Length: 145
Image 1 (cartoon, rainbow, N blue to C red):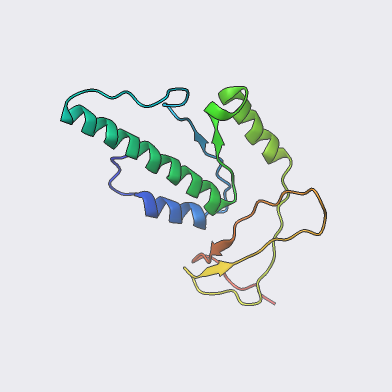
Image 2: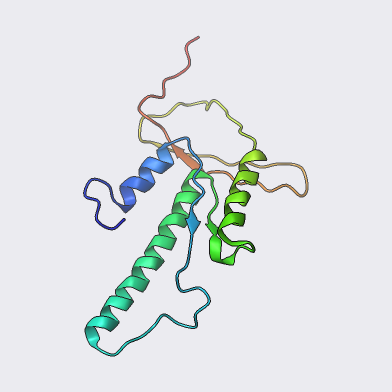
């Protein structure tokens, strides 16, 4: 989406980061399997193709950041054996095998504040995928005693 007026790159990343949702984007490279994108003569066509390549690069970066900010993982359909179907199956499998952990911080923080977190495990052969921070939301209140 390159024409939204109410939401942009940074604002949607911020909203995703503040949400408690994992995002598993699917990226499909339309130029996969080709040596290079098609080049045509004429400066306007070359300019349009170059702009399109930059848009795809920005889109790929955006999807990777969405996954990183939320603790999800990006899937690339064209490089996953089995294609799009296998990518969706991979997401479903990952969702089935995840654990959610929570904690109550010593200091709640103020709305909008970024809090750093680190998750470590003491077992071999485990993969940990977690956010490295979160944003304190306006609705977060200290627990009542």
